[in-house]
Length: 230
Length: 344
Ligand SMILES: [Zn+2]
Image (cartoon, rainbow over all chains, first blue to last red):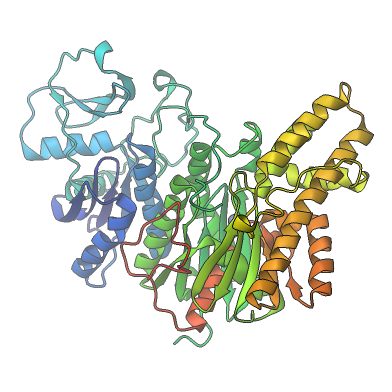
């Protein structure tokens, strides 16, 4: 049996940054990222080329992907990419709540003296939030709520800093500690009616499925713009 | 160059998640997961619902295609994926999955044009296509006349308003028939008289839009006609309206397609898109092609609708023609440049 901690590749596209990293328990290895400007789907394979060069023919044993919450189109790029990569490498793909990943990066950078809250912009004057203990285990959320309706009694981290190297190392540690990915999606409502009704599994390893937290906008459109496919 | 390449094609431009596998020029798998049942609840395609369905379906659809074709992903030599045109949110899922697959497998990737794929798929059934060829591509998402020549695609004409398939859906709704409208109107029309009602042929004689289409006037005319018939509309009347509407659509589509072949001196016409499954369009196009001395090629219905086989077929064709794979960093785009068969 291989007693080495699993080497994990982590992908995140839940915010404006597209990032891919490598790591294993206690050893955040390598990370590449591209901020804003160009879109996730356009930069992700170029970033992956750099990761492949760094890997030099080796293969991670697990892929972890940020499942949000975050803007849906971008989110799905990372998840679909991870699913394709997982099929190619025949290795498991686990989802991680992107707010958890921010919390892990926060705790990895400095000692945290108290419970804290991570928030990201959910547009429409709303925020996504989740609450963490001092070891960055999620104790509440994620939920989506109006910015004005919420007043946290704990320090709030509102910058979107997913470090995919730290994510990969953390996921590797969870796997080593025997955390089982909660790979069913029926434990929460994937098309949930509204944020407060959505139940997300408490465990840190989820299915590679977006945390939408909102029902889809039912706007029936012409399938394609007239300038496009018509 | 690969002698007998294994090409996997991914299609997610609208509401079907399709994965096809072509081995040595032969179609070996064509698996489709559709969110059509979900979409039917809304009477049309809801982009966000389609995108959500794609991301859930893409992995299992890839697995099913491999199983069906009896190959492992490690046998795949190249991946082709629809990069546009289509719904951007939907396209992104396929493009991202294809990029993940291709970089994991270390194989070439082709970001291709959906319209060209509708043409290339006919090679899976009727053998290599001549060059050049004209195609009439009609579906819920597009109505275009295109000329495919080498690795170039030229759009000769397009709809100025509704897509042909959309017109079928909207008229079906007016007639109280279910979504998607195409097959239901086709069935109802069998019992009806196509000359029962005089309906407009949009742009039929407009020299500025010789190869363009317009269906919104026709759609409005049908709505007005139904109102004028008063309640309740009998089954007989529904059949007559369906037949007259279908005749008007098939007439204008087939007439312009044959006219385009004549104008460009092209002797092969291919039909593609979901509306190509319409029995009257097939029959009338056949008659007119015959009398104009053209050869009409129509893929079987399951290859006409959006699917992964057509993407794999185009990928295989590009490899055969020695076209270089697409460089990393290509986008998914709602309006793929009409001149490109594939991104370079
Ligand atoms: Zn199509």
